[in-house]
Amino acid sequence: MADTKGPRRSAASSSERKSGDSAPGHSGQGQTRCGFIAIIGAPNVGKSTLINALVGTKVAIVSHKVQTTRALLRGIATVDGSQLVFVDTPGVFAPKRRLDRAMITTAWAGVDDADIAAVLIDAKRGLDQEADAILDRLAAVAQSKILLINKIDLVEKPVLLGIAKAANERVRFAATFMVSALTGDGIADLRGWLAEQVPEGPWHYPADQITDAPLRHLAAEITREKLYLRLHQELPYQCTVETDAWKELKDGSTRIEQTIYVARESQRKIVLGKGGQTIRGIGADARREIADMIEAPVHLFLFVKVRERWGEDPERYRAMGLEFPKE
Image (tube, rainbow, N blue to C red):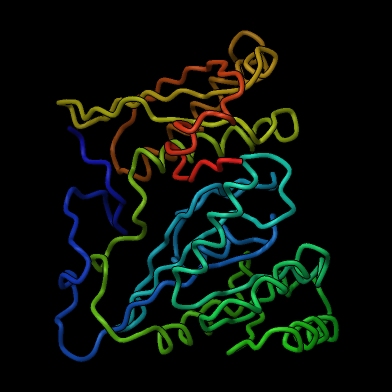
């Protein structure tokens, strides 16, 4: 069976170490540190872009469509002797559907399991209703908490200081950082501070690993991102992509089969496009990025199927890494 574990910084590898094993590239001299940092925030505040900036390469899909992130995704960065494991959580908002409730439960579970909870605020939106609700809930979180104000390049300094002051009056933050996930401003300072604050202990992952997500999952996420980028508002976010087959061929290339599931026949026609043009474009974009990720030629085959009421199917939630809400 082909290896589909998380990729390394240079190439995909079949090796995987158990938690606590010494990591390659680290001599073991001196005290190491390792910690989990959960990024929590409202939809579209830039969590996935921030994770990618902190890791130094793309591990999370980015889209202007709300609720792009569904399950927890971990990006891994090594700073000196510290391994930082960043947890990208689904955006927190007022849930309306079962899928919404599942994603929000997953988001807060990621916070509860982390060593440090980092709340991300969009500087342009300020402390709006969604940010208010997150701050209220965050006050009950026992872990160390930090405030990250994103998109500082788009807002004047007095506004930024006002947001920081108001948020710190409501929640006891260990530190406040002004950053721009898009330009990289403030990212190095944030990484450096976290490297000093995470607990002492062995690394959980090899030094060159950038995420713990299996390649099958990352490949499906890449295709889902291309769907969103191509179709924008034409397709509801309730579509899903699953990797059905992954086979390494003798010539060094990889054959991948994926199915895009939609809720209605009308949506299937949108994904296919006139004469199959849309699905071919999505496939070409996804194939190039997946090939870059695994550093091998890729033969990608996409199928589009209607799966009515898939949002009520527990098996689909498990496939996405979500717990199925009973109510």
